[in-house]
View 1 (cartoon, rainbow, N blue to C red):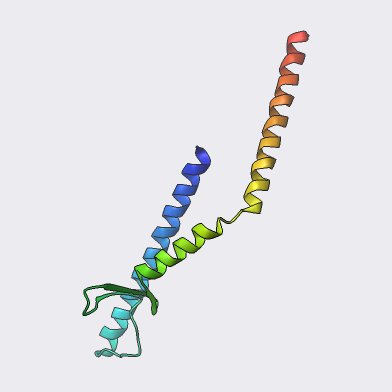
View 2 (cartoon, one colour; view 1 turned 90 degrees about the horizontal axis):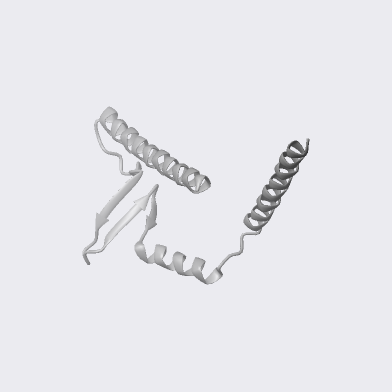
Length: 116
């Protein structure tokens, strides 16, 4: 349970940092426009959302287009792969072994104290 909570906090913190960086880049871009007094088409926004003529929403992050179709395709690819995480499996086995060893050690120590 503690590991899940830690991972959740880590993901939330990483997301917050990512959003903060994007917001900072956007503010810096706006500041550059104000400082020059005109908009330069060569400078692109860090994060843009536009609606095209079909009514679909297009998103671009750092100039890379991002669409829900691409995300759906990536999700399907990952589900098809059903990747096996080798290191996760080793970590689980190691954790179980260490837990068992600690329990046995504590059991020996507590039994020794009772015998004396």
